[in-house]
Image (cartoon, rainbow, N blue to C red; front, side):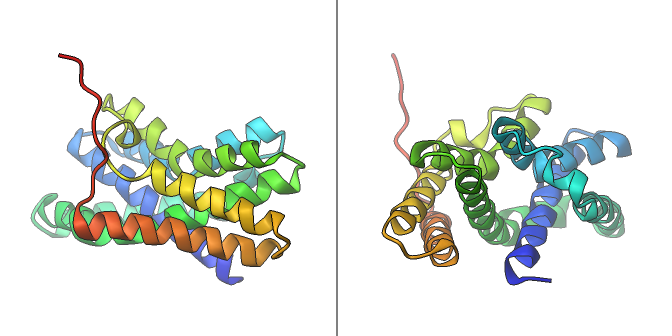
Length: 209
């Protein structure tokens, strides 16, 4: 298992857990939990592959992603049942998950940019594909749960994706190579997101009175 593939699966697990937690808050049945977790974990990558024409999409070629999501749903639902309902899950969501989520986000953005470049996309399209890969699943999750997507609020989330994807492209165009460029982009995405978490940084909001 490659280093990047490991973190890709880690990101899948973390995003799936965030879907499980939201499904628990919404009091969904097990099928609803699985749908929300799956949408969160692989939704962005699925949209990306569909747009790029990279079919069959990645999880059809490698069903490991689905097995990981199923296992995550079962294990986490059992974990929640063994503790005070959702209390500890909420703590995990507030303190541990954001850090792991940041790692998964950085990896997803890097993979999205790389895949777009492989398919011959230009710089702007590659950046957009990176952002879609990182935040697309969360948007679909929140829409299904009838909540305002986090990236449409004041969280420094999509901004981190934009910065990381842009740095990825800059280094790629400077001839640093695919892996080096991806690592630099991932580092920037991760650094910005972790800084925002640590210092509770928010973007200014647009208000009409």
